Length: 464
Image (cartoon, rainbow, N blue to C red):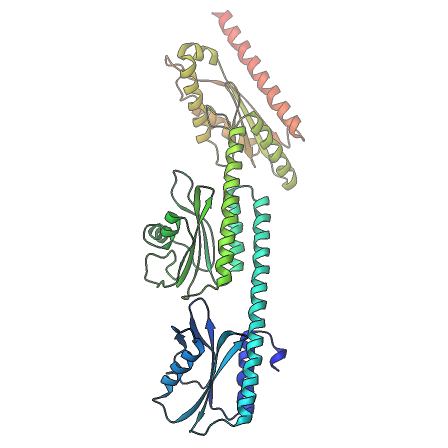
């Protein structure tokens, strides 16, 4: 019967069933040794008195002997009983002890002692096999989790999305746990990049924990911190419901990037293999976040205009291609707008290069303020700007053009001169069914607007 079961709890329950069926015992309990805390914990029992301890701290090399003496002291004040303590030993290692009690002073029969000794030896073997299986399972889970993290790193386009994937993976790996991934970019405040679990994280508690609690200790000392004595009212823990928290700094090289927090409600709630898993996951995550930050910085440097902060011509064409593919797939419209400042050479001559650069910065800021957050503003070249407007039809583009033109008219370019511009716009699918066709139509329209503007200016000068 014992050999047919695998789960530790089932092994112990089956053991108690055998004892009830084949011995005259009245009460029994099985205490297993926890190596991390060096305590014996009651893991299974049958009619074990409530006043008996459920955990026994050990301070003696002979752990099982101490357990037996401790249990014997607990029974001294009760009615007369015969108590048998059998160690659960595998080779020279103690796994725990089995306490069996009979009413009265009659001792156990020899055949009972033989049977119980055999049972204890068999249970010790099964428990060790279970521990070996758990250790192997933990290693397998660790490899699987790390593999999933690496795959997420390869597919995530930015640190925020990677952190969201990481929180979900750790939430699945650490059952009944709250997980928070914190990022702290240079010169910026700590923020919760992602979280998983039943409890919603409160930023106020995390900020306080960074000052007073294990989170702050982990980030300042840049080391793994395990706190296992939290209470619901303790403000130094990240979650108000925590009984145990793991806090691990995210450090890549000499750069601190944030922290990883994993919390459970119970005290001493994390197994040894879980601590190792969290540590390794944090190391992989830190290197991934650092790589994604570097990738973002590289993309910004190659796709942005250093003067205005808008994207550059290369990025504009990349966004048109991306938006064209998305609009075609989901049957959504989108618009393109371009503008060319009129008489900007005169502005350059009047204000000088630095003054003209300031005007271009104002133009970019003013245009950006009238666009949506997911619109793209690009400095196409010189004093020419272009915009990508997702999910906007022809009527919407006309409204945006009116707003942008009005915003441009508020900018002074010296000597009470107001800026004006030549504008052009196209929409998909009305004006083209390919990215190249749309862009060509857009700039042909801009050229036509320029020629018309020059012709009007020449006619006005001739009339004068």
